[in-house]
Amino acid sequence: MPAPSRWLIRSSFGCLLVGMIIGALLLIHKSYPLHPAMWSLLPVHIELLIFGWIIQFTMGTAYWILPRYLEDSSRGNPALVNLTVVLLNMGILLMITDTLLLPKWPLALAGRAFEAGAVLLFIMLHWRRIVSYQR
Image (cartoon, rainbow, N blue to C red; front, side, top):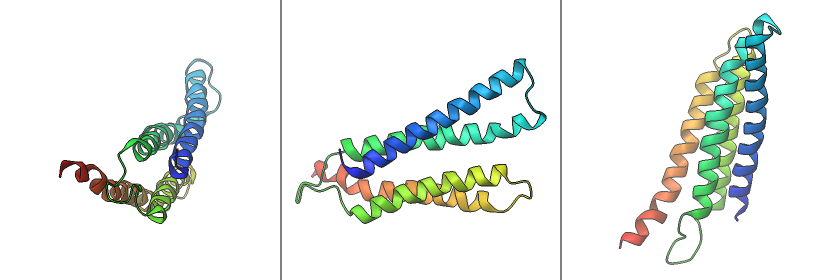
């Protein structure tokens, strides 16, 4: 398994663990109120489980399992794949930071832009790997 796949999958399981802990705390809070601000963690829970777990796990698995290029049997430019991993995780961290900060900074816009950029870069990097088998 290539290194970017390992990074994406490991960080997705880290997000799953933290997201499940926050989800468990939210469920406990429904029965036994812990703190009035507990529901402010719901967007963090959603961000971690959708973007942190599902999308990262899917991207890590896709990078590993998609066919290599026919002409040189590589997976493409490793620097761009590493940039994809960094952009996605920075976007997740910016979104979580924006949710937790009280004086709302415009980090959410930058976070979503990083996440969208990572997904678009991932699609650009892998489009030729998929299309090369149609010729």
